[in-house]
Amino acid sequence: MANILITGASDGLGRALAGELASAGHHLILHGRDAGRLADVARETGAVAIRADLSSLDEVRELAARVDDRATRLDVLVNNAGVGFGAPGAGRELSRDGYELRLAVNYLAPYLLTRLLLPALGRSDSARVVNVASAGQRPIDLDDLMMEREYAGIEAYRRSKLALIAHTFDLADELAGTAVTANCLHPASLMPTAMVRESRYGTIDSLEQGLRATLRLVVDPGLAGVTGRYFNGTQPARALDQAYDPAFRARLRERTEALLVARQTP
Image (cartoon, rainbow, N blue to C red; front, side, top):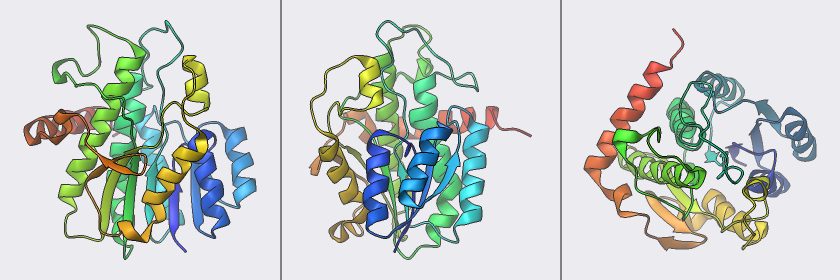
């Protein structure tokens, strides 16, 4: 059975995924921000639970260290935690490090967590990184990465998800020829989750649809060795063109590394 870390496992898609994988006998480490809900899902699944606020890069680093302490190897990392569009009319929000909140949680946190856990993933005979992205994507202005000039929660969300997709492709290229694959997906549209309810958008797809699409990337043996792909549900799809641009990805990576170093505790 696989050792699997799921972020954002205390509610919604992450919680459903944890239940399904636990029923199949996998060994789970579950992350969440809400201690009470996280404790509930840990009891339901028999999993190890680690609370962390992913809007803090220091807490992301602590999460990685605690996962490494508990697992000699990591077979699957599911970067599922995220911040949605926000409530209608809500203004620009900042992370604990002073970064635009959606960029921080939806992109910087999984970027850093994945990099810190690459040694644990490398100890697996066949490891997978699964990044939960979105079909809602918008081009990123690298000269206004924090959206200080114009701001809308839905725009910030969509930019952060495009950044995560671009990072997935970069990671797949970096790890080519190793036992670690990296893929991303849009699980389903506007599932009935707390994130969607907060935004007051109506729901479209069921949680079950998103669960099945995500579960496929985690466990389907037919995807062994498949890497650097974006899926819409269960179907191969194409992300926004910017995510495939090597020059853009190099600049994004450079900016990202600078942001991480700037907020690293001595």
